Amino acid sequence: MTSIPAPPAPSNVQGLIVRGYTHPYSTHMLFHFPSRGAAAAFVQALLPYLQSGEDWGDAKPVMLLNISLTCNGIQAATALTSNDLVQFPITFRLGPESSDSQQALFDLGGSAPANWWAKNFKTADLHCVVHTYALDAASMDAIVTHVANAAQTAGVTELFALAGNLRLVQVQLPDEKIHFGYRDGISEPALSWPVEGEPYDSSTLDNFVIGYPTGSPFAPGPSGNNAAGQFAKDGCYNAFRIIAQDVAGFEKFLDDTAPAVTAKLGMSTADAREWIAAKLVGRWRNGSPLEISPDAPDPATCESEGFGYLLDMDGMKCPFAAHTRVSNPRDQQLFPADEPVPRIIRRGAPYGAPADVDPNADRGLIGLFLCGALAAQFELVYGWMNQNTFSQVFSPNFDTQDAVLANRQVAGVDTSFTMPTAKGAIQVTLPQFLTTRGTAYCLLPSIASLEAVAAQAV
Amino acid sequence: MANPLSMYVPIKQDAQSQAIAAQLATQFVSNVQATLDQSQIVHYAKMVLIPNPSGSGTLALLLSTEFDGSMNSYLKFFWNNGSTQEAFAGLAALALVPPDPPVTDLTGFETFVNATNISQPADLYQAYTKTVLQINATVAAEQQPASVPDTADTA
Figure (spheres, rainbow over the protein chains, first blue to last red):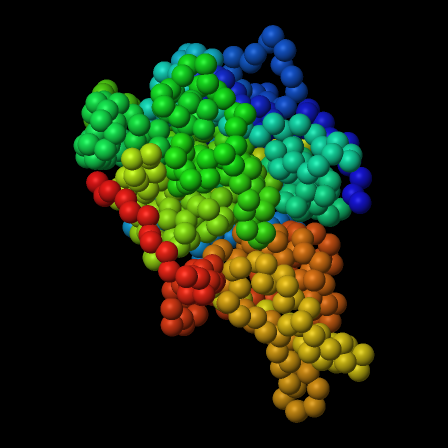
């Protein structure tokens, strides 16, 4: 039996891992390191704003940042050799464009890696993402300017993820919503520390932070006592994924499918639209879960987490392929190879002007999906979304898809979506709602490792 | 759609290693049967002894499988399972060039499997697109009495 080691020191873990910042402003800046010396000077200039996981009490920082490095970024910024880097998980080393990763992500059609980053640069050239946060617009401008100036001074090249050489800037939408109108960020892992003798819990911090062999089946690594293990310890992986959302297409889908619901259930068109929207996600747009509030959104349940699906095994409340039921099946039994349900720490934010401000703007989600094992956590769940193969109850022929997130061009899948009701099931065909704009597999290194990068005399 | 894994591991040439390799190949199916059944993602798996060019003894072990989905996403299951972990550990122990550092955790296991894999998804011919789950479900359905399917309105 594995004994539980002491938890990581919050002062050595980047803050983004252990808490979701509630700063309303964020900008995610991308960089390429031309040399180790340039990387060191750049990171050195950022250290004053680097936020750890320590409790800030009442002194919430006005501005702060965290730093992600890709495997190529680590190679460029450190003295780690190829023999050291091979100790990192292969999924991290090869990145999201690898043939194995694409067997889970299925970035097909417009989402193909060849189209990523608006074709401004190649994923392999992305070395570093600086995640900046601020409490107000002026502070946001100040820290972005500081980071951009630091890059220029150090000779580090800024890369731009979006067409028109635009930065990834968070847009302020009301009530923590995303562009499709749903409240986001409700269900997050508890990130407590495991207790000796207690049952395994996939939401504890040891499933995410590298270097703590607690017996977690996800075993975040590398954990060896070598250069790679020492650099990675207290770090966490970050699947950084930019996802464009077709808001007009989503609303048209609701318009087009509402008449069938109206005819079947006798509700108004407006109510039918919201009913379908709730069935697609498993929560009403205000956040109320269908399992607790099956008939209408309820402000009292908009953040509710205390529910399972075992009393809804016919999908009458929440359809099996609803997004939240696929991405977190909770108490439902999975096939042994898929157990336990992996949890993901989500730290995303919406980007792009809302449709009512600029109908033609590119808009979507800046996704930061944090995990301890990119393959066994992030990619496993992504694979489930692209094809519901993980449980007997989800898909009788094991070929349906997540109602919102999947790529509809995956070979052999069934793109229909079934919404059971007491008056018979309603079935619709799902269009493509999302387009991948870019993905990078990063490490959020420990504070000590980033300080070591900065301290290099090269 | 299935994907291939072809782990090619040149092995030590001493008599004991050669004997263990033969035993590993002989016992492979019985040792991993239950785990591969439980996984429901593996179509076929075999351990093959690759003979030396001289015709005497074994040059390498080849573990060849076809499976559904992304390989690395599912290696956790095989690493955390005793019988398959033993089979892979046996392979690593016989390797002419052993994994360095030794395989002691999931990350090391992923590295070893990928480093010795000599096939890619694009290499595989397949006559059908069904997954193991779909095939097993079809077989199970054929063994059950016919039932009336649930009907659904289509929008």
